[in-house]
Image (cartoon, rainbow over all chains, first blue to last red; front, top):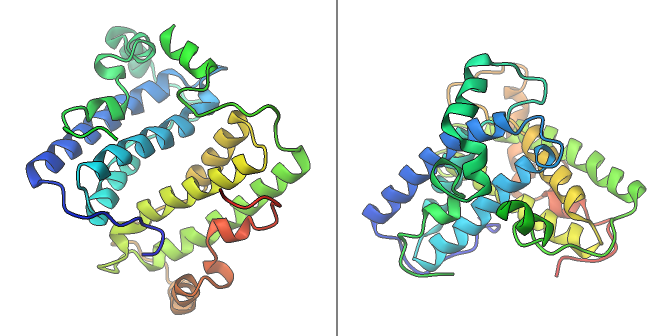
Length: 129
Length: 138
């Protein structure tokens, strides 16, 4: 595909599997986060942009660590297919409680635990972009 | 809050330009996105069982957004407009699962896929559709 930049070699399978696991956990966390932020007037309009930017930054790290086009595509799919962005008018009392009990919004603002950005979850990849 | 400060400084969502793209041009961008997402949703349906292409559908969309944001920025868009653009693309596109069936669309798939491969008609990339913006992608 012409739209996909090529890279020189394939990222080690164990490393890539770990990246996919991180992507799945991130998708679960950020699905909750995006629900919790759905009515936040400052952040709600930026939820898709955050997701896009996080993928883009993570791809840079994957690429410098040797990921190939197929791996990059699978990584993008894993994030996008598993992250849901809730509409502003969504209602779910169970998730409302979860917003409080997990502290995810505070964690997001402080870049830690379940609020950690995807690119920061890939710091185990040795080479920095 | 650390993240809010970084957002304000443009460190998370990219550098802040001095002014926004004019609303008429930006509305044309959004209208273009709307047509693109309708077209690419159909194409992605047609590619859903293609062993080579199906795996790259999300990646194609991601790189279309990346190129689109670059050209928008080159034409003065601000962070809010970029966010609306990204949202319009992501929300507008649906990915049919491999076992999806649409008897009305199936007969059109051969042409849709062919147009996609030659960047023609409904198969034109988003970046090509944004060629009305005067400044090209840096």
